[in-house]
Image 1 (cartoon, helix red, strand yellow):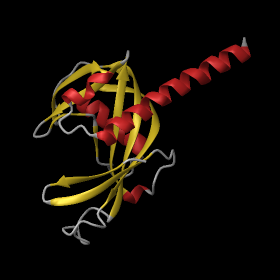
Image 2 (cartoon, helix red, strand yellow; image 1 turned 135 degrees about the vertical axis):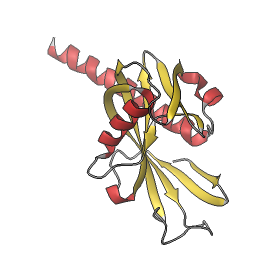
Image 3 (tube, rainbow, N blue to C red; image 1 turned 180 degrees about the vertical axis):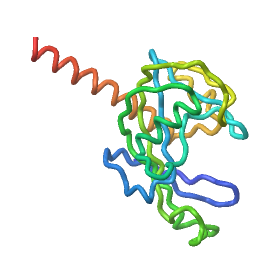
Image 4 (tube, rainbow, N blue to C red; image 1 turned 30 degrees about the horizontal axis):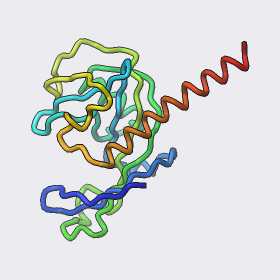
Length: 178
């Protein structure tokens, strides 16, 4: 687990990465994000007023977290694919003097992260909040992301391990069934 304190506006918020493969309660999930891969490259989207980021956003009514990342990846990056849960970023406002108990965010909330293996790359139309997309070498994410940090690096590393584990499982399945 990696923990970091960040400034969000005037507030100081404690972030802790949790690679637990169980989803938190949906009412505590504040957003869902995806590390989207295609041919050993990572998708980044250029969001208006934010810069280069990974696709993600808020869950809409009746939507599951996985449905949310599928929708956000399509709206922001015009991609679709299969998803695997990586884990959750615990967003802890316990030490945040500016946290508002009547605000829209819980004192302890979660940002859920998925790995998406892109299966379809559609024409980019810039109809939503992203103005561009690009595929970059995975090891260059820190050079492009508007706010890269050690926690994102840990999440990316976990996402890469998921890929390796799936290839290992597939190879094991193939060899035992041939």
